[in-house]
Image (cartoon, rainbow, N blue to C red; front, top):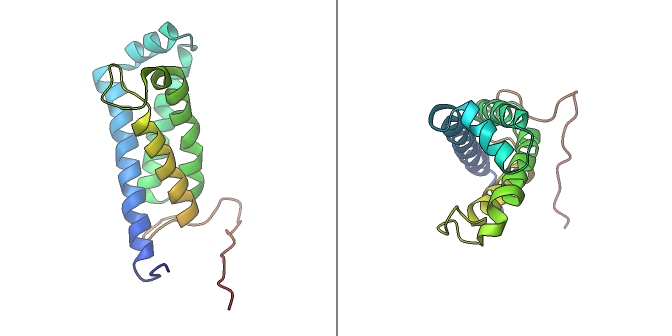
Length: 145
């Protein structure tokens, strides 16, 4: 049974944590590797270098939207392709454990599961733009007797 009094705060905690993680991840690309260095890395693994700039922007915008609570369920799902891209192009060949050389895919798999969990759980408390864009509202499951 889900505690309906505390569940919105659990979703808020998850939403804020995921948003901050994406902001930190993008900041690494911006301030440590630099956008140019990230583009070179993307090129070295066979991806278009310009995709690095799209990825950085996607991560920053998605992070801010999640932190503020702007359509967080939709944004959580929209962030999954970025994680899948990293999983399949960089980490999958390195084995499961993230402590493996060049990092395995365990962290990314967990991060993807957390994104999907947020999308399924709901927007959480204090969301600025809850629900879905275009006036759509998610269906709410009801318990049968």
